[in-house]
Image 1 (cartoon, helix red, strand yellow):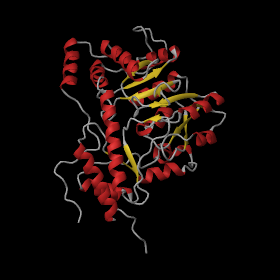
Image 2 (cartoon, one colour; image 1 turned 60 degrees about the vertical axis):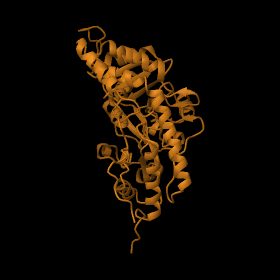
Image 3 (cartoon, helix red, strand yellow; image 1 turned 45 degrees about the vertical axis):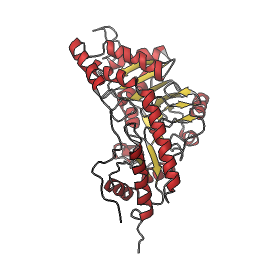
Image 4 (cartoon, one colour; image 1 turned 30 degrees about the vertical axis):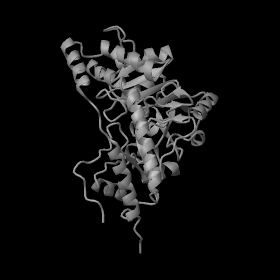
Length: 382
């Protein structure tokens, strides 16, 4: 008999906004300086000092804008090809199209879900200008292999670090592994500013280009040097981000502890047909998502059964980007078997810092129950 639904569901994500963030917003509103002012400048400095040492930050209004402006600031544009994973949120490829370039999709590693360097090499052409590795679910991509490949072929690297604040690869901070990087501060990310993004780079020319592009092409008012955008971050959002940043280390540690506890609980339960996430050697995962694979089950039915038991979960991402209608004009996609398999059987479970030990036990028990009940087993066709 299946468990009855619990009155209090365990959410798959839970943004934590409290009195300190509210006070910071109120102070900005009282100051009268609302857009790209002292709060933004302070947030840029503090974020890089804590999360991406040695880099400079340029704050914008979203993670998508950070990707878009980052590509433009690097000089990527029409005629260029940019290699991206297909197993990601569409914003990664959208930014390439918005920059006027063409996304070329490569496959991902089956363990980390990040760009597979061997697959990247297979799709390179004379028009390839850049790579956009995504540090998916908080697991850093293999920056060693991808960086060596980029250097050998003379390619730019823009990291999509939207889900990987404070992650590290072989002791180096995500956001400092390429020529530039893009972070997101959307409400469900590991830290939020309500909405917003950040470009990080060590190149003064890229930094200046990004600052011009985010503000109508101006460094001095009414002296437009290039055709730019209006993607500035507000001081209201920056003030929230500064408060959240002060808690990032603590909340990252909690995410890691929650992931370790889930792994221990699920390993003990040994649910059949459930593959637990792994961490590559040299990677310091920050667990934006705790993503299992369900090759022995029908993923969507498994998710429904968990939700019936009051356990929130989500499939990121059920449709690979190369199969979306928005990119149909690129022609018949090349086979990406690892991507297609991941899209069909991944499921993310709650791992966020607001969880209590009892929540984690409940998540693990529900996964084990659904797996053993057979409720999500593939139906036999006759």
